[in-house]
Image 1 (cartoon, helix red, strand yellow):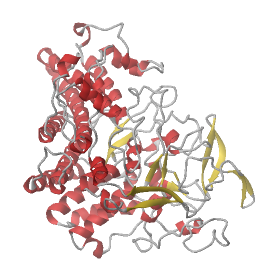
Image 2 (image 1 turned 180 degrees about the horizontal axis):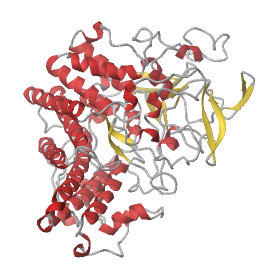
Image 3 (image 1 turned 180 degrees about the vertical axis):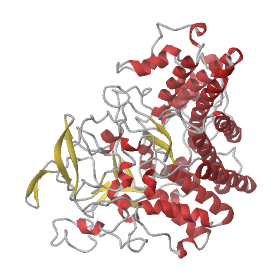
Image 4 (image 1 turned 30 degrees about the horizontal axis):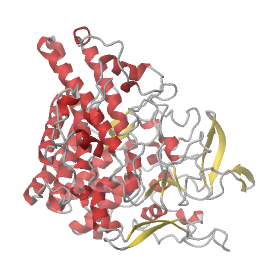
Length: 613
C-alpha cells in the first residue's frame, strides 16, 4: 500500500476488519491489500457502516490511549522512554520516539503528526462512504447511519483538535486521500478556520448521537458536548493569553469572552442534562491502612476495569484484553519488573507528594523533608519523606495514585500472584522482613524519585503486562466539572455552583470543602481549580496541555536564562535539572511543535512555525 504525503495510509473495508481479527504483529495497515471488497459489495447495510466505524475507532484509539506520556512534559511525572508495543496493532505506535521531558520536546513528534493524519483519513473514509449510503437507505436506517457519521465526525474532530493544540495552523481536508498528488500542494489552514470546522464536527455529532451509547466505548451526546466545550475553552485561553509562537494568530479579548461563555454553556449541559455522576457517587471509600493494599480508596478503582462503562467515563477507548492484541499498556508503562516484567517507563516525580492536601485542614501539609534513609531516625522523623507516617491523613487520591516506602502492591508473574510486594526505594528485588514476614521488594529500577505509580497498576493476577482491558478515559466528568469552574471563573469570578463542583471532586479525596479564602476572588479560585486539576487528573496527559494554554511554563519552572530547577528524590539527591540558562527561543519551542521537515520536503506549501525557522 503506497504511503502518501503525511504518511497517511489508505484503508479498505477489509483492512478495518483485520484490526479485530488478526493476531499478526506486523503493522497490517502498511501493506498492500489483497482481498479488497468493491464498494458496491460492502457499503450496503448498517452492519457494513458499523464495521467501518469500528475500524475508525481502532485507528484513533492508539492516538489517545497513552496520553499519560504527555505528563512528562510537565513537572510531576518522569517519562524515561516509551514502550514499543510491537505486539499490539497500534498504527506503528504514534507515541514511540517522542520526547516527554519538560523541555526540548517540540521537535520530536513527527511520527505523531503523521499518524494523527492517518486517523483523519480513516474517519474521512467512513464519513464519505456512509454519506453515499443515505440517499438509498431505508427510512428506518437513516438515523442510525447519521449517528455513525456523527461518531466518525467526533473522532475526526478529536484528532484535528490534537493537531491544532500542538501545531497551530495545520492542513485540513475532509475527503479520502488516495495519492500524493491530492495533498502535495495543501497549505496550512489558519487555526481559526480549523477550529470552526472541528466545532462543526462536534455539533453534528451532538445533533445525531444518542443520549446514551448502545455499547461500552461508543460515543453519545455528552461526549460531543464535552469536547465542544473543551475546544472552546482552549480557544478562549489562546485568545486571552496569546500564542505569539503562532505568528498568524492574533488574540482577541472579545473572542476569548465569547468562547469562555460558550464553553461554560456546553459543560453545564453535560453536567445537568444527562444524569451523569462521579464514579461511586464521588464517595471517598476507605483509605485502608498504611503499607496495605487489601483495601484502597474508590479513586483507585476508577482506573480499573470495574469502572468500564461507568457514567464518569464520558468518552473512553475500550481494549480487548488477553489474547486480542488489543490490550492497553498501562501496567507495562507504570509498573516495574515485579509486575509481569513491566518496564516503568512512567513514574511520579518527588514533587507531586506535596500537592496532596491534608484531610484534616483541607490545605497543604508541611512540606516533606528529603532524608537519606541511612540517617539515624530517618524512618521516624516528623515529615521525613522516608517515614511512612508522614503520608497519613492526606488526600485519598494520594494513596490511590502513588506508592512510597513500605507501601504494598500485588506482585505478578506468569499471570499469577507472587504475594504482596513492598516498595522500598533503591532496594530492587531484595529480601526484607516487615513485622516478622519475609517479602521480596518491588523491582523497579526505572524509578529515580522515591515514588512509583499505584494509579493504573493492576492489583490482581490473570493478565499480562500488555493485556489489560481497562477502558482508557479521554474525557471524564470530573474534568468537565473543573473546566466548567475554570470557564465560569473567567467570566464571572467564583460562582457558587462551580465552587460546589470543585468541592464534589475534593470530597472523593476525603477533603473538606474549600475554605472561603480559596474562593475569595478570581485568582485564588483559579489556583484552587489548578490544584484540583493537578491531583485529580494526575497521569492522564492533561497537565502539559494546561501549561501551554495558560502560558504557565515559565511560572512553574523559571524565566528564560534562569538558574534552572532541580528534580530530586525522597533521599535528597539531585536527579535532573531543567531550564538551566534556557534561552527564550527554547521556551518558545515548548509552546508550539515543529512541522515535520520530511513533510515540508514533500510539500513546498507547508510553512514552518516561527520558533523552528
